[in-house]
Length: 490
Ligand code: GAP
Image 1 (spheres, rainbow, N blue to C red):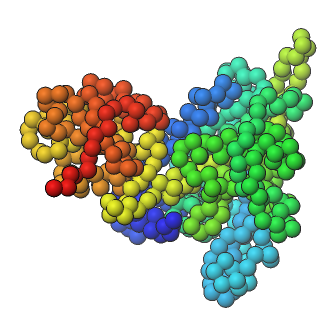
Image 2 (spheres, helix red, strand yellow):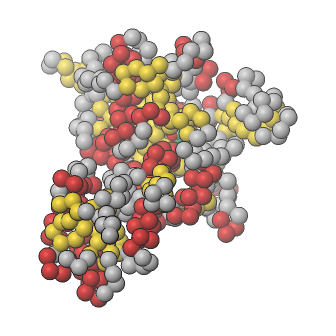
């Protein structure tokens, strides 16, 4: 795996990610996404929404504002508890942030020296609402999307006619004034979250099934007793009481499956339970889905059991009833639902995972091949004439015009054919469509699959349908006639 610095360099070179306002020297923790980056990011969010909202019938979406009434943050506990400690290593001067549980326990990650605490900070960004200073109200940029789900809970529940168990999903920008932003997109000050609050009636039975997929497990007990991680399947993880609730085990598996269904390497994932000291103020039990980055195992997604903490807090502070009435066997019951799990995922961290797992150097081709899942790939196909003649170019441009109605495809006419393949391999473009000498007469083209450079010949009239199928996962070589691309030896 390449280093995080090399990944940042690659992302900048290819137009995935730039440091924000680079012409002015940038600003730590803020990043801008270029032409390929914005497409990958949008595709990640789209696939997350497909998996969690459209493909289920128990989750609906919402989209709250970034700035809201500051009372929200008082009720949620963020004003009093969203605190980090700024620490500087006494020996090497390395700056970092520590949370409460780490103060006095952690040694410097660079030189193992002792940290000196330089103060504590609330990591919410402060702003003011209203242009006239004297009349303005103090407000905060939201540090998580979750709270707007809680404050709109009753309206969403009524409008979507939801019955427990159900979830509310949201994707949106959040802001944290991190003391030490670092590791490229891993720790930013502005980023996006994809979150679900999943509500249940704690008296009701778990209605789904936990599967058999395997993952490395690192429980609180294993961490305390210095035991190694263990490879286990999710069913056993629940049966053996390692993850205490069926719901929690179920959601951990779902989140792992979301990543692996989009091409992430299952061997680089583990689930780690939060220890007593590190659990958030609202959580009964929290597990992180972690990924082995080049700088170590790190949190990719937090999955907390928030119980009825948030709804009760908002009921207390707003003095509005947050419970719902459900009918069971002809009887009406008033329930304060519990958030049995809150899968909370940063888009930028998912972006890094997919980029690291896709990045390969092909010795034979002597270029980088970005093996992104076609669903995530920024550009779905590049279309080009094998040689630049007006006749071939016209066919290529007509194909692009037609495919563009449905897919993000490009016309690529510059440089040699080898250069065009290499450029598209590096951008992660899964399919290259070439117009050659057979195209004008036979009305066929070739499609090259990025990962092995093999090609099939297909009819132009079938291109749209084939592209639809291969992007959704069908094998290209079952849809067209494979052609021999090897040069014959004389
Ligand atoms: N609502 C719960 C919540 O916000 P969190 O563990 O603080 O929980 C959830 O954040 C996820 O947001 C993390 O697992 C990570 O993917 C992402 N995240 C958190 N801080 C981040 C940062 N500074 N930069 C990039 N992503 C971050």
